[in-house]
Amino acid sequence: MTEMNQQLKQRFDEKGYVVVKNVFDSNEIQSIIRAFEGEWLKLVQRGEILVRDTRPLESLYPRMRDYHRKNPTIMEHTLKGELFDLMKTIIGEEALVISTSYYFKSPTTRALPLHQDNYAFGVSPGTTYAAWISLDFTNEQNGGLQFVPGTQTSSLSFPDADPSNVKNYFSDTGQELAVEEGQIEYVETEPGDVVIFNGNIIHGSTENTTNYQFRRCLLTHYTGESVERLALNFNKLIDRNGQKVRRRLNKDTKITQKQKSVFSIKEAGYFDSWK
Image 1 (spheres, rainbow, N blue to C red):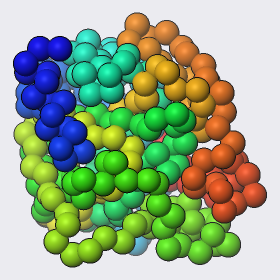
Image 2 (cartoon, one colour):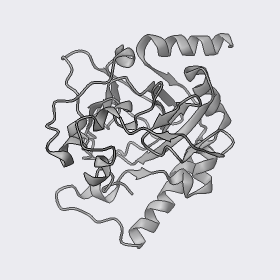
Image 3 (cartoon, rainbow, N blue to C red):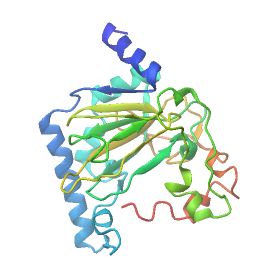
């Protein structure tokens, strides 16, 4: 491991997240934005995006999931070698892509409550790892990331939500974890920066309170190649060469331990608002 990689890993181990500067250049950033704008326009043209009176901008610009499997340009950026090298440094082994998510985070879009990723992903053994590619300048005002440093080594926790209310239990607010005041760190990024964090750290993003700033990002979730089972996309993992990899379904994820089955998340319609 090079000295630079050792420093990167040390910073990650200390806080549970690390900001890596200038991983993507301006041409790559614009390529990602254009690819998702193109896919978004197709959704609009097909009438698959419906604007809600209560949340017009948020519903017009929904979260978009797993377009790396639909769009060659998005797949190309997902498989960027430097990104996989960074993840190998952090994880300690080759990474496998679990899923990708694109966020427009338009003005007025609500905060993403504090949560732990692996609570729902169910990676075992180990945990998930995320690479959050910043496509705009981000800060606390326009929906930037927030972390509770040090919780990356914590066990997965049950939220306070009532498990009998299945739809709410699997929602973003249903997965919210309460933390004491003063524990949160807010992160600022520039376009092209990548924020890396693991699936146990408590994190979220703030509300976009600006009048005109979008806070776009492309988020990729990974796990290490030694993973044996997981819930989400267990049979659709991707290695650094773009080859599909399969693992076993984890039927005992933390989020479903108080539910009837691992498929309760589908019954709750968690992904209905995603496109």
